[in-house]
Image 1 (tube, protein in one colour):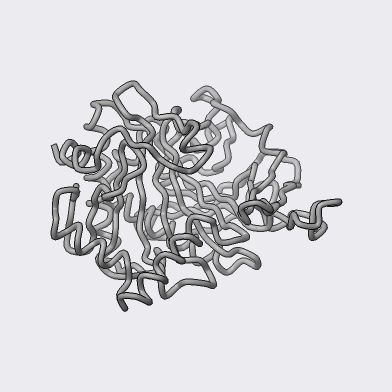
Image 2: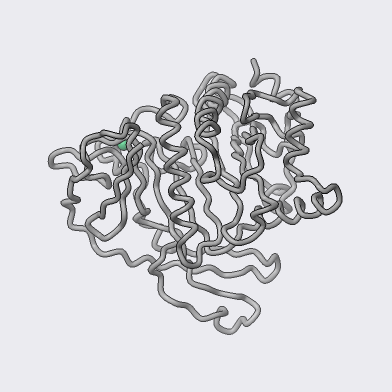
Length: 359
Ligand SMILES: [Zn+2]
């Protein structure tokens, strides 16, 4: 893999990750006349739940479902410059033009004026876009194992880089796939958020893991993994280094957790052998997901990594993949119980879904 960092016309960084060590040089210039970046983003803490909420009003103007010949994630062609100056690429990462968090946002007051109980801070972090291929008309599941390996290396590189930025407390690589999920660009891509706080979900999971560790002296996810492998009823795919299973208390109509057998805090800690096997195993999982309803499955793939500064000894890296599709053409909506009370009602049992995914 070769890594080349360049700068776009408005000062944003773009990084090429090439599958081979000897690709063409990545020297193309961004010829566009782009206005300088002036993102405005702030976070406010909900005084009733203690959870942070981000406000990024400038995102309302972002590109929304452009026609394929105007796709900003395709390589540039003569007379048609895009976000990627090169005429082809393998994997490319660049700073989001419409970020929810950015390093150069202005200072704010410490609380919302007139409401001293509502903490407020600049939305200081970084949001990046990861393009998995220059081919507009494919999907992550159709990538080669070698390309997925390059993507894993890119995720690991960005986790290290974003973790070193002032104020970033957690790095979250993820992919939204499918219009049903709200994807605004069809080109196969994901995103990486560097959050200025530990996310509520991670904070809660670390709390639970800490209680379990104190009581049993062992990491929680290690015991869950061992029990799932022994039971076998919810396992979808497994290898020497990874197991994929439907969790016993799955929230979503389709949900698979892909878990490394070794406790590591984050993607940079994975060995080359673990990265290689992940590529094969994850592709198998994605093929099974698309076969479930015999159509491309809309999904969210979410990497759970340790925060940058806290809970690193308790955390256990894993990927959670889930879908809102409960039948081939019916969506599960997050309605009253889910949205109002955060209580999920699942219409299928995890054992049924695992059996269908094993097919
Ligand atoms: Zn495209």
